[in-house]
Image (tube, rainbow, N blue to C red):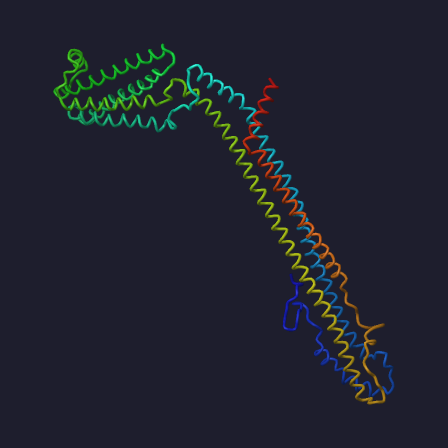
Length: 479
């Protein structure tokens, strides 16, 4: 601010307002010369009364003091405004602290209520699915184990398509030379045969899980279905093998001409490439059966029941995790804001201290300017009377006295009332701020303790279990 003083070799000064220039006034008014003239024209004088010349000197100094008072009044308004700005800032921090405490309590309650509301709408379904799961385990004599199934069905089926692709390429290679369509025909035959082989094998593996079923009827039915599918797969491989051998001698072979020799002599295969083709096809069949067995839990139906319960349970865990994360985030934000308020309050206190120091320097400098003006009046009148005494000699004393500066028409007083009021306000404010800071630190300590209590209330396992129990009781009362 422009009112602040700066330190120079001559001491503290105002940037916009200078000292009373005694040397300049001395050159302009020439008091010693004028004193000699006065003594030459006036043989008798009243030493205790100012002369007209001396009144002129007093008026010149008073003109300076008037400008000094105007400057002081103007700057006093700026100082007071700055004091009030800082005071309001300090008071605002205390208001903000109360708002922060209220904000945390309301927000934490809101997070807790949202969690309870969600749990109230989902708990019944979640408990029903849990009962369904336990009933299924009991009915099927299963231990309380997790269901085992692919975490990603996309990846699981991707492997099945990889088997189809690999076998298709193998078949394309073996059929490519024999087919009348060449490589394109081999690829087409390869993909068709591979698709049926892998699909039937996967289904067979899926059905084979029924060997684990507690029901003998479903177990036997599952094994019987698996046997039929396995036989169909084996027949498919034989058909592919015979078709390949006949195709090598007759590119335009018909399907009916393949079935007849296959039914009469199913194992009459003479080509080594054909045997390799069958062996690779059976290997793909084995992998596909294993993949089919792992499409779901090894116990039929358990995976579907478990997944329904697991989905609701994951929703609950996700909701609980979200509530905890929101509470932790709220806790961190509240502590950070509390620390920021302490830092702001400390900065305000520091600013007030600097302002108090600057104001003291201003008042001291302001008073010093007035004292310099008084000294200027003394110097001028002393020089005037010394000039007169030089003429009077010993006849008239005509000595200077401070009495000449007071009384009617004397030197004006310094108007520093507003400045002193601002200084008193600032000192009172500093005292209040010290009290505010002590109170703030105590409130912050209590606030952090309550934050910890509320955080534990909403985050601890025991508290959440109590919430769930209360929700369950409320549901039972409604029913």
